[in-house]
Image (cartoon, rainbow, N blue to C red):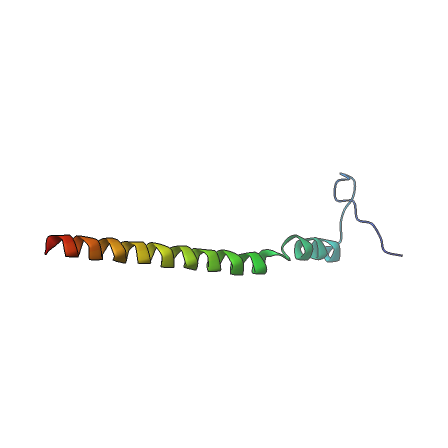
Length: 64
């Protein structure tokens, strides 16, 4: 039977293995979130680049 770890109990002293398990569970989503965030930032940068190029072309055409 699996032991239930109560990290909220001030008298509880977790083992190194329990702390390692807690850290693993706490940060399990970080790699996927990082990939998603980087993809979103790349899309935003690409959109902003397109907008900047369009504004440049408009100003260039207006200057002629």
